[in-house]
Length: 162
Image (cartoon, rainbow, N blue to C red; front, side, top):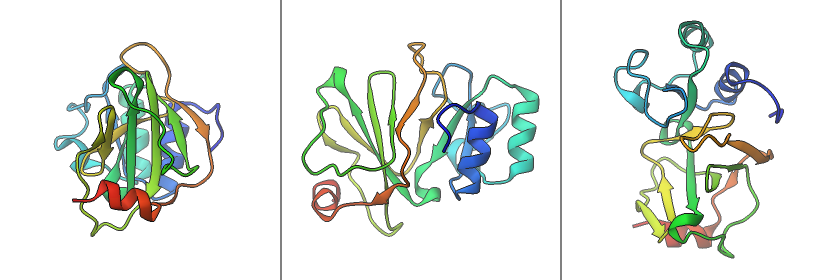
């Protein structure tokens, strides 16, 4: 993904990759319920619907529904004690307001815990705010490693599954 594109273009590019997206309220991580009734369950790859969302409100943030997109995201929050572990392999990575989102491809039959460690949440059933959304702190989500997500490493899978 180009690192300097706008939200509409980013949402359409995510959808083109097969990642189901949803509109979030401007400057927030909450679903935009004027546009989606069932939050991440309403996520889509439909380009026409995505254009409609941005025509309705050009300032929306973007969310990516993890399970529907075949990805698992490790949400590392530094303020809560999260840190990069040796088990994390380089992959598609987004800088958040206070940490990182590390994206891995994952089989949909895998069942993940909700948390890996203090400060590291596992986003799988649900969604994450995506670049270039605006974090509630005012920081912009930024892609810092734009390679395609790699397959979830076996060691990390063992730590992350129930």
